[in-house]
Image (cartoon, rainbow, N blue to C red; front, side):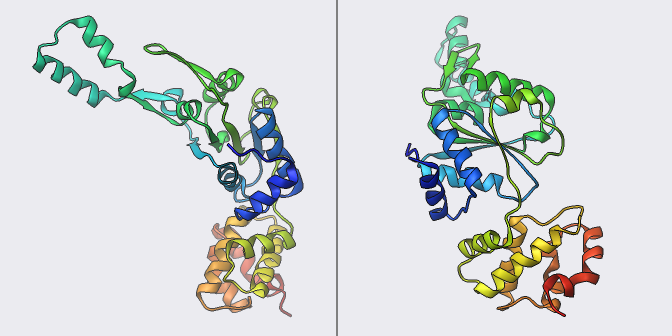
Length: 290
């Protein structure tokens, strides 16, 4: 694993990977790699939290293992499960070959080769960046389990024993703040609020991700998206939407953003009908046309 030597070195490596981190995020990411502490990234959807984990895996030279959280997620779905179809085939093969000793059969059923490793177990077994994405969507019970896992990076599998990480994963936990995550989880992490970038940095992000798009167009899209975020929309556009919008305009052959083009492609940036109805009458001013 190639650990960065300083926050500045990490920021430069992330930039080479196409991710432009601000100074605060670069420092938080550097500390996470050096202190073996998870980094908890909170912020609006689309500000680049998930992309940060992906870029961090690229610059450190390890695999990204992602656990997407959702309501009802439990430890078994996140950790491991047994491959029941293969176990049944094993039983039938044992019967066909005359292996009838119950103890031997039982031991064979719970061999490591029948274990299906889910993201959390995989993260214990190999160096990686572990992304626990949108933890705010999971239930309180799963959050409590995470606390136990983060304490010592080890789990016990009743049939096989204790599995502990030789090298703790670089862990990135994200939240879109659809609900408040318990303070106990945040206390185990380094915390960073990921805000929307200012127009200059967003334009630089667009140019890094879409080098084929004209400089004028990326600047206009970044400035217009910043104005959209000032309208108190139900779902303000994130960086991902800005990238989509600039890409859509480029596909249409645009070198600059005009009101008619903005009207035709607005659905790439604004994804809620009430927001569309609010934005359309103001498009000329938002685009910066008289």
